[in-house]
Image (cartoon, rainbow, N blue to C red; front, side, top):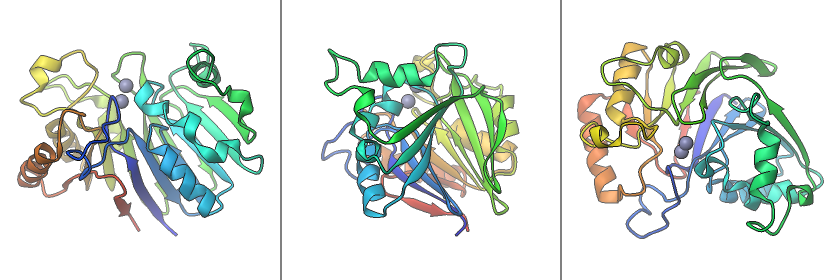
Length: 274
Ligand SMILES: [Zn+2]
Ligand SMILES: [Zn+2]
């Protein structure tokens, strides 16, 4: 087995389960990455609920949950992640933006605290290990699975990831805001030569001027970064909930015209990098 990714949630901000979003999917950020024998979950948005059912079905016992950051759309599904309530399961939850800020465990406990949630974190009977690192760190996640990280430009910080296995690599770069005309050097360094870049494409370049300081980027900036860094493929990701299927179909056409390596991420889509 090589390196692959499945999209369980492709939306930013808030889940949008409507008939007009079902084509691309309404769940918020969650990816499943398989690198050989290593199982990785990237972000715990609402997409993680269905992934949890799949994990139980496939009897996966151990996984790392690597978070870009802890805004709601990236952690809100975790209280509904059924495998976490199973004593025979083991999860390591990692974040790179909170080591000076109370740590990731406190955020997960806070999310499940009364009076806004009835079941506390301690009710999760799986073995949960929380690990804080610093965005920019590099580590060997498992034998032959190497991870590089970079700080992104987002309110309260966010971590971009590059996962390398078997000579292939994929990068997960959300949420981040670009500065027009000044390609983000942190991101260019992270994605250099990568096989796949999954990028914060909340807006279009046309929408961006009215969204400055909102912490997000555009699919066109994703294309520009990939070209500059000689990355092979771009997955347009973190879709704005206001972008219904008809809008996203147009993005798909426009992106294909701008760069043949670009595609739009859809819920349940799988990309196998070999
Ligand atoms: Zn987000
Ligand atoms: Zn965010």
